[in-house]
Image 1 (tube, rainbow, N blue to C red):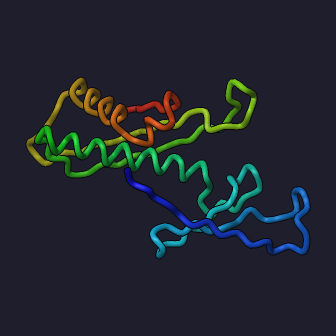
Image 2 (image 1 turned 180 degrees about the horizontal axis):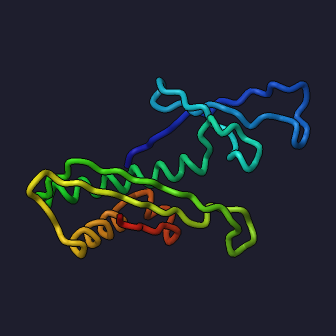
Image 3 (image 1 turned 135 degrees about the horizontal axis):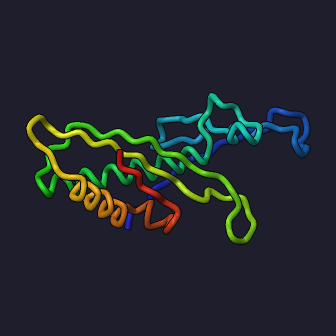
Length: 149
């Protein structure tokens, strides 16, 4: 099995750590070379210019789903020319009353090489297969909805 990791760095900028009076801004480092500025979601006082964990979770799911779709499409001989997605994380309370990402919606748009087409049923089935085989989707269980555009 693979072991994959990140480095997270946070340093208090304020004199004291007091409730509601400190910054959540931090850096997540990927592959020892790419630093991503992260903060709380804007609704929780974070800087909207930075990504937030909920967006990162959506990005991980969207990316994994796309890579799985591309692998399946390649095996099926589908000449995918481009793939675009708009992933949306929904925040709310889970059945235990805790704040949670309650659902992530994916809105994939797939374009093929000129002259190639598949019908809506085949595209839907391939997206469903991608969802079933995506590692991140399997981790999140039933909180993903795929809306094919």
